Length: 494
Image 1: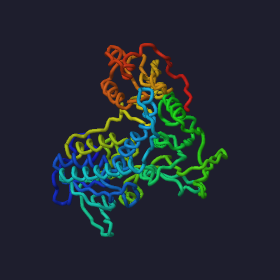
Image 2: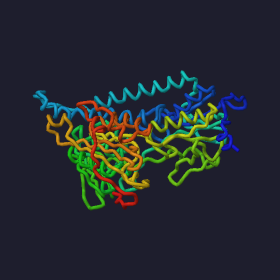
Image 3: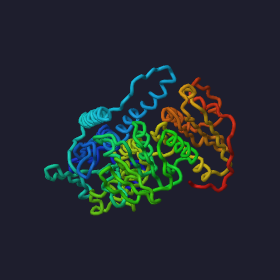
Image 4: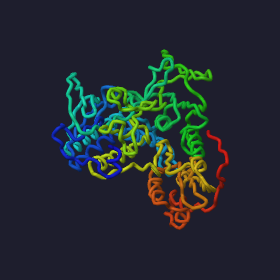
């Protein structure tokens, strides 16, 4: 019956039902939860929300309004990427006439202070946004105690209970540590962004976003970096050709890349941490970063007691409208493990509010969502990879590529090519995917994403006048097909 109401467009509008303390209670004040609560109040809902007390490093009892992205993820990471980029830029500047006669030192503590000041400022902004929207914020740990009841445990142990017509879970995910001897000696991305001292040598385990981004950050700041991952190439799930480009760039920047390698043990010594790999290698490091994935943050929510189903990794099962197996309980963002990106959580939060309180059932659209890996230089993609396009194809797939030395590098002498790629459906001429690894890739792909969302064809790309001189113009000047893949041709998954 509940599902039928959604399909028929009879979703619950805000009614301020006096049987409940709130129309909506949100557990988790990260990007998705904040967006959902604010938009719900715009539809007239009375909204309560709880979040753990603020701290840059999260735990089961510490968090903060703003969530992972704002406080210990995207924002502070990007600040560190900016900081790490200046070192190589200063090296390149010499070829452009800048005379740098003195040694240039990097002060990690100064950047750390600036980063902390910024996330404290943002934490305050998010709190004010909630207050201005009329959201009642409670500081403490929330859990579900019934289909229409939430309990909040405050820092002093006081438990407060609130009734609510709808519950929204937006608790995100948390970094995980691998089960190896000495794992307590390692750190996660939380701690990496708040280290008191910059390590001179690091070992990173993992081949995903976080691993390659921190490899670039620490190398750019002058550290010796060893990057270990299980596969032949980093960034599993991305286009294989672009993965190879990133791997070359990491090595070109001086990062020691250990493919098909994992860690077997960490041992504390007087000189640092001795890291043993599964190949019998021993590497000394000041710090070891585990970037081996994140798990949905559901363990302490009491979901089993109320019948909310989770999957084998702990993610909350939801339907296409973000509704759980209990009709009054909903979930959005990383805790559902659908597409774990901040802008996606924002989309899901907006559409949740529209569905539940706006009277307009709305499903998230996960097609042609752009995203970026902020390694140095960055990788950004939208749409299908070549491998995905071939797997889904009913006819030929045309691949267009361009590899060139950026104009800036022709003067600086840096040997690092920008690589661009378009994947096109041979039958319809529709552009199915675009990717780029090189300076400003995320800024460029964001615009390309609009074109793909509109269903642009390769002919329309070709008829677009480029901006010269720019790297972006390459996307509208790739005329020759690099290769054509016929449907059904087997592929090797790296």
